[in-house]
Length: 321
Length: 276
Image 1: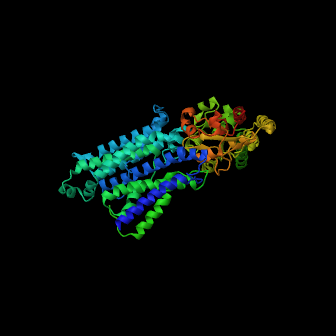
Image 2: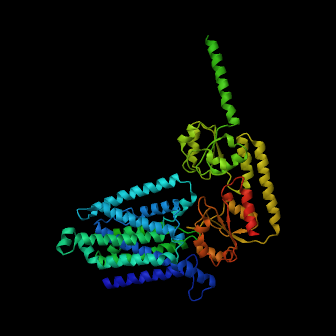
Image 3: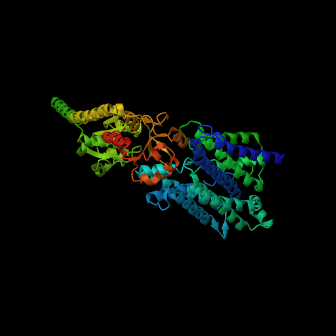
């Protein structure tokens, strides 16, 4: 039964990927393409699908890790202030004329901001030689409020149209996806995902409680730190790829849990795959629904995802972290 | 004694109503809540009567020296009232209607600018000019703009229709769609705005649809304080196969057409010079 479900799940993800490439405002038949269609497929859709897949994977896996590490079903990578810190860093970078990396400067400053915030959250969550879930969560929420407020302040004080528009980018935009950022971002995401997969047994133990994990022979604090770092790495890379896209980090792990169970060894990779496929699908809907207009993917994810989540919640009986 | 008091109060009342009506005819303390109306007021020669502008009002140069009363969507009511204006000029395109209502309940006089299309500009100017008691200047300015529009219309009758795209911001891609002065200007010049069928004024546009629409000329508008050449590298790379980019028909233009004001004539000329 489980194997059938997993196979179905993988097939669906693969089908969405293919569909995301050939469908759009107009269908493209890859076997008979005009020069224009080839151009659209190779330089617009392919990088876009790749970015959606990477971002969705990073967010889905990050959410699964973080909900386990913090033992809180409401945790997601953004609640810790990572995205607002990234947006703030991008805005500050633009204001101070940080243009060292050409047009990658905004993503690079977003990545730096996200990483710094992760370290900061970790530092505030650190006490008595380790990270503590409640401290991490509260520190993250506090920093999130602070950064969002400072960003709002900057935006309302600034009369710079350019800055306002550039920060629009932070609210989840995949339309400008191109190959330049994909290699470096995918390295971070693959490393983070790899760490999480190797540590998924420890994550299972952490969810059951520190004492339990300790009795099973896990170095609780070390495992928590490693998993937190893996999450931070993936989230930072995803923010730098396409800004902030909500819903996936918070609710995709829950959807996977309802469908496939709560074992982290399956939950982490499945949340990654489901997140990736789902963002590809949401982006496909966003660019195909009302052409030539584009709807921001960050909005579409929640509009499609939330009803499905609520439906599952009604239907199923279990919901555990 | 009582009679005298009544007469006295009548006289005082009358003189009060006269002094209240006087500035209504010729306002001397004007606040402008949008960059476009600020430019028009200056062009009408009312610059020295302006006492407050928004932080977006950066044209002409003297406007920057005026006291700032906040942004377009969030002007500070307190700052406006503190300046004791006798006329507040605002627009339906950017200022919240609530501000107008609040100002009027506080007894301040407002003038609401409603023109959004190029064709509405001359009459808009006449109306505003009358409100500030400068109808002669208004008539002259409106006439000049009308003349220039007619001249352009006459000139373009023989030109070949081209597909034109106007990029307002490259990432994420925002273009000038229908209902903007830019769209009006492109049509006035006898060309086709490729994004005219979009449903909003500044739509977030699909890049792949744009590649299919193959614009022959691309304009990139100036964003304040940004190096547009650097910011638009990415989008031009995406549009590399489009005729405009292939044939080097990409022009960076000023922000003249973003504001429906005295500089639109210059903005239209800029577009015309590039398409040629």
